[in-house]
Image 1 (spheres, rainbow, N blue to C red):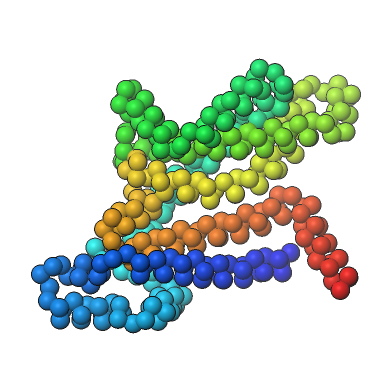
Image 2: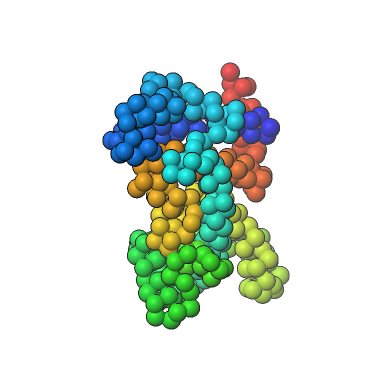
Length: 319
């Protein structure tokens, strides 16, 4: 198990290097001179050239990339913002917390609604209730998130005046972004829960429990649901990455000061260090989440541990 974890951690290194190389390479594509942008149009050519030399923009791209990676590894330096002259990391960390709260809340909402609908669908299979659950879940999956966001703003902010249309001055500002992102994952949780519940309800120990006279409620809650939620728990980690991507888009719609809005604003301002640092930090977070998810699979379902270790043992024996 330890070797498996160490191997997965080591695999993160080439993945992050590849992601950083792609993102850094895109930095050279947009037109414009960052030094001229920082100093303004009134600066002389000598001042612009001195600024380029200070920023290392006259070095070859590979040298710039090597210095950038060296700064991250040795000093945790993701660059300095052109607009504020502040370290990118210090600007992103508070926003990262905001994005994390929205993402976790969205996953919790999506999982709760999806599991509830999946249980109803499994217990009422092939009935009108099952069909209604299918229609509801597929509706939320088919409609784009930004459309749902606009509808929620029209209903809860403009018409009912219950929630703020933008910003997070209070806890109420988190509700609509969480709800919007969470609803998009309802179909996934519903489908997994329904399939898992139907499989578990057909097991021998469920029939034994019914033969002993236990109520359907007790069988569902204490026997079937506990085992049926294992695939759901595993899918939560996978949906975290999707929720982070959705949060980055909707932060602009709802005016939430998160990482997504920070990167979007930096793109419009041609603030390349902020764009590069923000995208790279998001990539690091996503890869770490995927690593934690893979490890949690083994913790949640011990059978996977047997499969991993047993598979390696069989390969060695064959060799």
